Length: 312
Image (cartoon, rainbow, N blue to C red):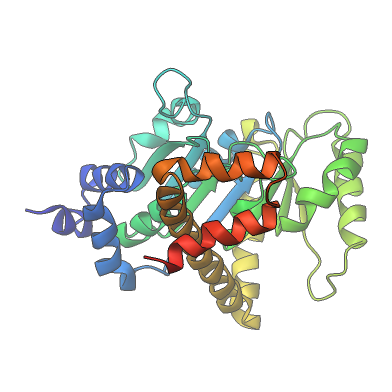
């Protein structure tokens, strides 16, 4: 039986192999995703992001278990830092979710960033599609740990859960310009710690200063370690999906994400073509030296490099 049939029959090994092939940019995997793309679009994709140490993995684990109690199938993509030794993912998340990994209705995959910026891996969007084809009802995508530039999750997820912890204080002000805008639901994890109420109030205050009038973004206090507040958080996540479907925002959001994904792929492919041509006969180094020596300006250099595409 080929990998396509095995995937559609729910074979976990086939799913894992296809994701690996996609990570390695094998044409076989790309062709199969192309062929089966009409089977995607059914899963609710949930991004879990927030500062390192916020307890994202524990929270993802508890949310997945709650969905399993409701009879749903769950996929989890945990994006980890890439190992400097093996080049693979450091599998911390899978270790923390070891009991969940034994569940037949759950598929967990760790992916190394492999130097890709934005908090995700280059192959994350492909893996999401494969899990969607595989038949997962919900797909969690857990980012490395969000910083000012790590906001790519919003280009992938239907619902972004921003995980905060008590004691952030002025840090909320510091990070709000970069990441506060991408959260659809906020979770104050470790709410058994002192300062949780204050942190939740501060987050709500910052959110209320935003321009969004149609929906007040919920802030839910959770202690994932003790499984407290998880059910309430999950209900808010599902409520966000209902809201988007009712007002038509889901279609708009997925359309915008598809547009960004296509543009990103075209940019990558064009860059590969340009760099391949520009490196012939040391053209790129020579033209760079000419810019340094002020023989030409960088704008003219750019025009000359782009002309390489036109002159096949």
